[in-house]
Length: 443
Ligand code: 4AD
Ligand code: MG
Image 1 (cartoon, rainbow, N blue to C red):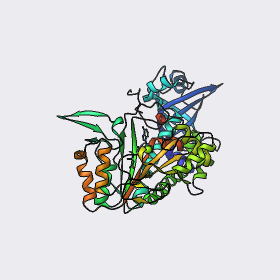
Image 2 (image 1 turned 45 degrees about the vertical axis):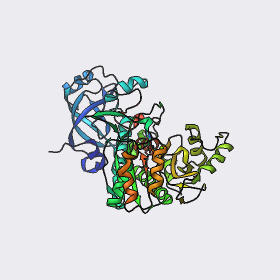
Image 3 (image 1 turned 60 degrees about the vertical axis):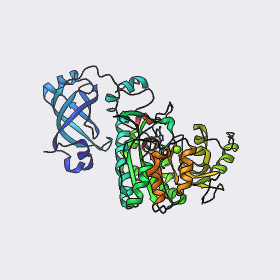
Image 4 (image 1 turned 90 degrees about the vertical axis):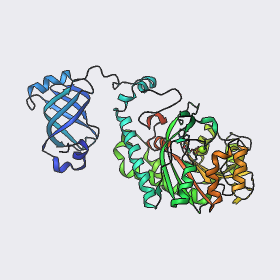
């Protein structure tokens, strides 16, 4: 038999109004006001107020109330009462409470705690309302990511996590013994995704990726989830078109399906609605340097952006913005090059890489990185050598350019940065159940 949940009642209050129900869950909070006691009850699907009045409930329940600490597990039986002022639209007048286990001295109380303490207690912290809301939105985003690609006929393609080589530079690889060899945790599924696209047409990969980043910022995890579409017969503008449609799809899904959660998180929803209102600006790297200069943040041509530059570019537009045609020397080995800051791909080394990053507004930084791939075998082979990578490790990857090479491209969207931006939480550590960061491996 399925257990009735708070969310089931919230979805259909007229059907339950006046009926007696039993709900299984936990004590979130409690308070007394004279002869009336209020027990905030949560069951994982929602949080409601239950009202305990002497005379209307069993006497034992009234006494039990005092003993039940925060997070005691309880079964509450009572009458549903529609209540427009309640967050979920109803309350429960209690007849009986049964304690499954009485909890005492729950560490994560409702007062403010320091981040270090909360991180040590991450296994309990996730029961708090804001954490709950962020993880629910994460779950919705993960569902709708798959919907988006399925609707467009992309096939899901799962690359390995244990890999023999790097994709995004050797400085951020995690290695692990692999019998008599060394293996690396995947930094990106892209290279395998390219093989997949040549076999199956448009594909997407979706899984955990790893970077040994020695960065302690609000945007960096060492283990994060990435979704990486790869399209054949595609060029850089196709990649940006897909990225823009994808991000809008995710934002719209959250606005349509995560109202309760966005309210708990106090997210400014007008900012999110604005995202749907127009095209994302597309600015060349060269153009972006002029914008940065105007804002007093000049950088010499050829340097990558830091956090302040990304934040400024996000502020300039109040919209996600694509920066494309980066200097080729600061990009990975696999990008097709161009000669001009807005030019198309050329079959030689060019000053610019046909890449595009999508910068989210409000300091959330780069959420998408991608572009068009080098499709000529000789050029790619030379680049691999120039990047001090071993050609024999990439022999299979070069085969994709030997046998039926076509223009192709794709991108990677970082799931946690996207969740952070949409939920408005400050730091990516609150967007994944158990974050892994430079100094965080437990719990
Ligand atoms: O820009 P990146 O490094 O691109 C790639 O990995 C390409 N191979 C993707 C592709 O073209 N298929 O990473 C892509 C995205 C970034 O834009 C960012 O959102 C996220 O992955 N990301 C991180 N998220 C959290 N913590 C980190 N340390 C991240 N590094 C990258
Ligand atoms: Mg990047």
